[in-house]
Each structure stands twice: as C-alpha cells, then as structure tokens.
Image (cartoon, rainbow, N blue to C red; front, side):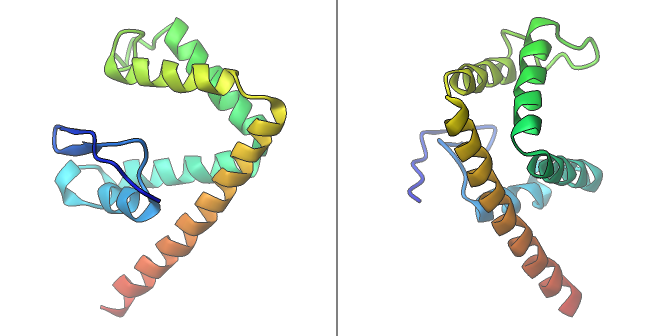
Length: 131
C-alpha cells in the first residue's frame, strides 16, 4: 500500500491511512505519551467491533452521529467544529453513503486488518518475551 505523506501536525504524519506496522509503532511508541491502559482499551474496542460485525459497525457510526449532535461536556475535544469532530463527521458522511453490501465488505476488510493486527501483536509479544 502506498502512503503519501500530505503534511505533519504535532509530529504525527497526516496521510490517508496508516499501514498496520505504522499504527502499532505509533501506539506503542514513547513519543506520544499514551498510557498502556489507553492502548489496551483501544485494542479491546477493536476486538469488540470485530466480534460485533455489521451491528457493531452500525452502532459505532450511530454513536459518532450522536456525539456530534450533543457533545459530551467532559470531552471538549469532540465538537462539531473541532478537528476531531470534523474528521468524525467526514467519516460518518462517507459511511452513510455506503450500501449495506459495502458496509458488509467494510466489516470483512476490518476483520482481515484486525487478524493481521493480532498476528503482528503476537509476534511483537514473543519478541519481547525472548529478551
């Protein structure tokens, strides 16, 4: 997969997508000061989304829509006009335009991506255990 680096913001590459190894490297890097619990929570949410299939994907985008309509007071980073809010709205609008069969294809692609993620995580864990 080709990855075109459009710009950089706060030291994080901004591009259409990250391949698996890039995302994992970012999540586990000390550079971004992510807490281990944040990374584990994110990874567990990915697994929940995978196990839930199409229904979970539909629920996710319904939740995105609701958060954009009524932002959480404890999470000021996600509002209609915030960078994150604009990004979420963009992916929500894209998702809403998809047919059901395209949503199913998205879930299948996500499942493959997550399987690759899981395989890669086991590889990294085995390498750490050997040290």
